[in-house]
Amino acid sequence: MHICFITHEYPSKGRKTGGIGVFVQTLGKALTANGHIVSVIGSYTTNNQIEYQDDKINIYDIPKPKIPFLKWWQYKNNLVKTIHKINTKTPIDILEGAESSFAFLPKFKDIKKVIRLHGGHSFFTSCANDKINWRKKYIEQLSINKCDGIIGVTNYVLQTTGKLLNFGKAKTTIITHPIDTDLFKPIPHILEIPYSLTFAGTNCKKKGLYELCQAIEILYKKYPNLKLWIVGKDSKHHNDLSYQQFLKNTFLPKLNKNIQFIGAINQHELKTFYAKAQICIFPSHMETQGLVAPEAMAMKKLVIFSNTGPGPETITHKKNGLLCNPHNPSDIAKQIEWVFNNQSHINDIKNKAYQSAIKKFNCSRAVKENLKFYQSLL
View 1: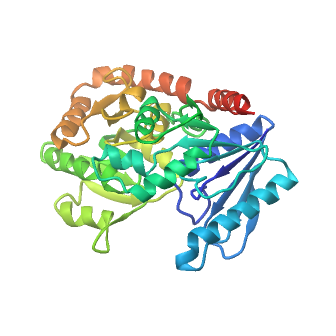
View 2: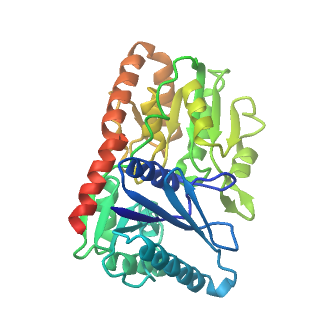
């Protein structure tokens, strides 16, 4: 089977990546290891089309649009030409994208289109109780109208998006994101640093970073050795201020000894930050699933995740991790302090976290479930 993914976040040296890109790389490598063909199309930083391979995955880096008011038209044309080129060489069975990927694409004979709900504008805006932009919602609906199948990475994202957009006759299923359990696994020789926490994710409002820093502010006097490592790329805030700078202006120098901004790092570096932290904490306001919590769980770490959205689909509170109210700094602080004061329970929680992550998020399971769904569309 030949599966072609559309994403602009595929991991590469010197390029900003994201959860979707990591997912495509992880699933893509697992699919090629099972004898299938995988192609990835994205528009990154080049002026000319570049083709290369990442292991056995074929990467097509199409030119970035140059004319500001015609960007969408140029991008569509470049994308369509590349799809036709790939399909002529090796016929594509499945073309997969995110919520708005297919809005302006034509029909391709014998190619089935699949949308994986990574969390589009309508989903996240609705969950944040903000006003949905009707143009963006219309584009997502146009895209969904052209797809044959829809995959929700959690039941929550599938049900919530289904209330906002009309899935029509598209076939639906739920398949959780896989994680690379060969990469994210326990590292016994790296000792945990007491009172240390690792956060990983884009530095932005919806990831709950502001409330997490407020929780550190609540705890730092009682626990002077408390240390929070904030790992992840920065994002825009407002008035030309980045979100990271906003946090620094708000909480530093008061918490200068307690909070450290690491920035964007690769996955091999990330697993070291997971390993040395006593707690891996991700108090996101909303996620479709989130990769970081399962990654840390697969490393047998104590994870604090959000009790909102799909959080309870990943963690059962005080069984295989902890859940917090991401909008309440006091509750975040409460869960952190519970870990510090209940060490006799921690190893059991860590072991159950590891077992559940390996069972639910392993690549072999994801390959089987995705191939079964893809095949059902052909």
